[in-house]
Each structure stands twice: as structure tokens, then as C-alpha cells.
Image (cartoon, rainbow, N blue to C red; front, side, top):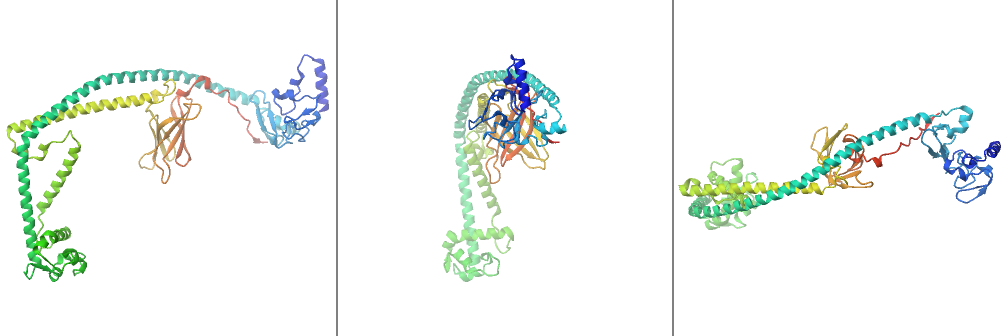
Length: 515
């Protein structure tokens, strides 16, 4: 090493115009730090801890705690070695890799001891540099072409925004007319229904009277049935039902064990020893009737009178009518009293009034439907305008566009600014992995957040981060689940091809291959 420094001193004496500090560069040091190493001066550790003779630099012994005296050897465990890699990208490696028998620097400088003795590391920097430059050129071409497509997307996005704004303005005018038509048809409907209500009043009275008579008949029929059953149970005809008579009546044997238990008797007789006809009709008959109905659902007893099936059907129909009526009350547009009445009773004038009311209701329903459709369209357009489609609306043309990716197990579907789903190839329904929320992270407009997806089993709601990068055609490249219920996707799209953000030539580390 002393001979080397002597040669440099003589060389500098001859060529005094050359900056020698830029030439004298100890092994493992970048050019920009060479001025910190001056051969004819003592060396000061970078951390200021020691001043040592310059001959101690790169002597394979670690003198400085910060390893600054051994940039070209592996003596310091915390040191680093700088690969110049002329023709390619420079590289910094841990000093522990120096002379370890593995070529880390493409110029072979990290294996200087082995290379000098064995010639083991070939200089591949030119080849790697050429490949890196070709890759950088390819990436640059993509960014240039993508930037042109992005400009087209921006123009289309601004055009779509203007179209939506104009459409909203147009819809507001149409909506005003639709609301006026709705109000007019509502007034006509209400007027026609008032006339209809008055015309149907007499039929309603007739219908109520008919129902009252039917209820009276039903009540009388029920009392007759109760009286008949009472007489069947009252075998001694003393106008009382006693415990012994209950024992003999098989219907009370609900568990079919051949005997009527005390609990079964107490249920029917209300813990009494006997009940008379009046108590039977008021209380006992309702409980016994339930037992008879339950019995007849399985096997009919020919000795017992049939319960009036027609009456049961009518009760069911009445219940359905009540349900329908309760539903129609909630829906003001469809409700009309004429639906409860027998239209065959109407005279010609009433039929005409009912038909006019029906037409008025239909006209209102149509006007109301058109008005609500316009409201929905306006709301949808306003929501779309409020979405963040990028600083220049470059993402607007992609709103709602869907892209799929299939792997061995699932098919993933990304619908931009809408939702993400996952479908198993083995069948089953789609699982929502998230709904569009916002842009997140820095730089902005490079990561999309879709959250509020379906709940995982005993876990949180699913969510997905979609990372965007430059590409000439929109495409979903990958889908992973790095954490439970948290998904990550990579998506390429020309909307992010911003030229001033395009990457420089990629830094290609030399492969760490065994010799």
C-alpha cells in the first residue's frame, strides 16, 4: 500500500493540475466521499472518536467504532462496502460480504482478494447495465404512451362531468313538470275517491249488515255445536259435566295413553269438580274446541261431530283479507274500499264511478312513478359528481367498469368506485370484499380503499386496498389476503401514468450467487 501511495504522490507531482483527492479513493468508498480520505494526513473517524494514522485505513483491523476506517474490508461488523459498478448502478453492501466468496458487486470489487488470486468474479456490469437501460427505456415508453392515454381519459372525464351537470339541469326542469303532473293527478284521484266513497256507502252498509248476519249465524252455529257436545259428554243428563264423564270422553286424552289424567281434567274444568252448561259455553267450549281441532288434524273420530270446515275456510279468508287490507292501508296509492265489496251488486252509475276512480288511481301511480324515477336519476348523477375521480377527472370514464382475475380457487371481480367481490370456483354465492370508500395514502390517487364488506366468520367486516400503477390497459394483476379479512390487489391503469412521476432507471442489485 505504501508503494501505491508513493506512486500517487509522484503522479500528482507531475500532473499538478489534477485534483488528486478525487483520484485517491480507498477501496469500498464512493467517489463523492473520497475527499475525506487524504493519504498524507492522519485519518479522523467520522464519528470523531479517534484520529489514526492513514496507514490504518483498510488494514483489515477495525479501529473506528463507526467502521469508517475499514470501507474495503470485512473487519468491522457494522461497516459497508461501496461497489462502483461502472457501466451499471452502484451498490452498497454490508462489509461482511467482502471476500466471502460470493460475487455481490457486478464489477467483482467486493471479492478483490479472491479475484486477484483466483480470478473468480467476472465484470458483468456492462451487460447488466445494458439490460437495465433497456428496461428503463421500456418503462419510459409505457409511461409516455400511458400519459397520452391519460390525457384522453382526462378529456373524456371532463366531458362526462359536463354531460352530467347538463343532464341534472335538464332533469330539474322535467322534474318540476313531473311534480306538477303528480300533484294534479293526486287531486283528481282524491276527488274521484271521495265520489266513489259516497257512491259505495250504501253498498258498504249492505255489506256490513251481511257480515253482521253471518256473524250471528256463526255464533248461533257455534252455540249449537257447543250444546250438542255438552249433551254428548253429559251422559247422565243432569245438565252438568262431572269428572267421571270427562274420564269417559276420549278427546280429553291428549297423550293417547288410554286414560284422562288429572292435569288434562284440570285444564278443561279449571280445577272444578263439575261445570254447568253456562260455564261450558263461556269457557270450557273454547278449550275443548281446540282439542277437537287438534284431534281432527290427525285422525277424525266418527263419533264426534265435524267442525264446520267451511267456517274455518271463511275465517282464513277473512284473515287474509285483513292482512291484505293492512298492507293496502300502508300503500295509499292502491287502497280502495270497493275491493272489499261485491261489485256484482253495483248499478251502472256506481260501476262508472268506480271505473273513473280506478283510472284516476292508475294515472296518479304512473305520474308518481315517473317523478320518483327522475328523483332517483338526479340522486345517482349527484352522487357520481361528488365522487373523487382524480385531480383532473381522469378516473371518471372508469366509473362502474368491472375487471376480473381468476386464480386456482377464486374469481375476483373489481368494479371501480363500486364494490369488490370474490366467488369460489366450487360454487356458492359471491362474497363482498368491500364497497368503495375513498383514496388513501401518499402519493394520493395511488391506493383505493374498499371497506364495509361482508363480515368474516367471527371476525370483522372485509376490506380491500387496491394499489394502482401505470399500464396501457386497465387490468387486475393480483389479489392476496395478507391478513385475515384484509385483502390487497394490484391494478394497472393508464390514468396514473404521470410523466413527472415515472421511475428512473431501475436499481438492479447484483445477484448474490455462490462462486
